[in-house]
Length: 170
Image 1 (tube, rainbow, N blue to C red):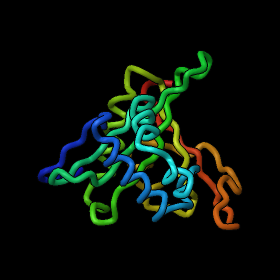
Image 2 (image 1 turned 90 degrees about the horizontal axis):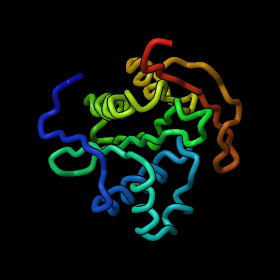
Image 3 (image 1 turned 60 degrees about the vertical axis):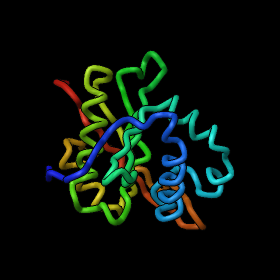
Image 4 (image 1 turned 180 degrees about the horizontal axis):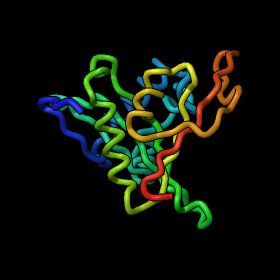
């Protein structure tokens, strides 16, 4: 992974809720096909809703020169029979910060955080997003399933690839 000057990756705090909201809404607006939620739904939410999201999940932010340039969320399954699994979600890097290694560093932060907490981390990615699929494969994820028509946006279907990273020996 490349060394990026002035990069800080850390878990977002409640005080970062406005920054998180702005980046999340940008992600939903610019890449609506990549997320299960919608810009319209989340834009209508008060800041307290984003604060609650930050309380409920571990969301890592990548700050370049003090500006939030990317994020990746992690949640663990709560059901006792699925508590060995975590989920990487809401992965997004601003266009200006892409192809810098920042995405790899965000995924690495999530995986480091998950180690010792869960045995595997799962994610879904739109099949057409080959750059994201390459990133996840480079970070140790393998494809294990394919959901035809997993998402539908503006009358168009998007297939989703299911991926997993087994964090230890299986």
